[in-house]
Length: 287
Image (cartoon, rainbow, N blue to C red; front, side, top):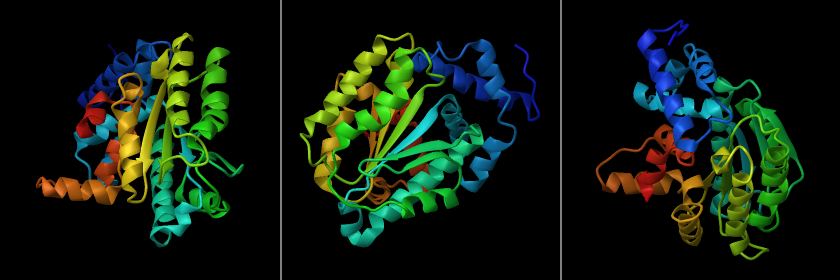
């Protein structure tokens, strides 16, 4: 194996090993062969050190974030009325923070940035790369209405951006969808969300890419306990739990970790959120 590198050889090999493991665990061989993995491993330069320094992460944890380079990232954001009516608008602040950090980490690995879709609004964010673009996008959205999460996840994200390209053999990369929401679906039967996910898994399994081509990360904002319980059921569902992860809001998880004598920083919480749906180790942490 020949590595072309600008940083220490052993570091490049760590990148390679982490990416190779990710491809094998998620069965992404249709997207990435040996040569492509080496190419990606050589592309990071000093970016991983940058993440480690900026987020105060141990290098071994920062290296695990290299998995994100394998994925296109789509944010599906809750713009229902409860996002502004509850907790004095803190939920929209949390939404901004999550999207901004996602845009930042994604831009390190992919010049295309991230895609953003909203549950209710027709406004779209395409190739979003930084915090300023996030703020401009979110400020243009009128937060109102209910939360038809399952129906619109299918029509706005999964069907046009994942399933249709997969059926047409045009899916360029696996897709990680980060769903930021504050509550249980409203305006539709809550079971529609579960059905949507199961159908997506089934449809992808019939393509050459397989169901590993999709990861679904639910990131809760706000402190709604019924919402937390609802999402937790998806996380442990025997049929789709392997492609789904659910992360409670930072404050809740921080309190839980502190009660166990462990400190949880916001950046460490972000790592769990980014990797939970695509790395079995992180998915198992809260199950």
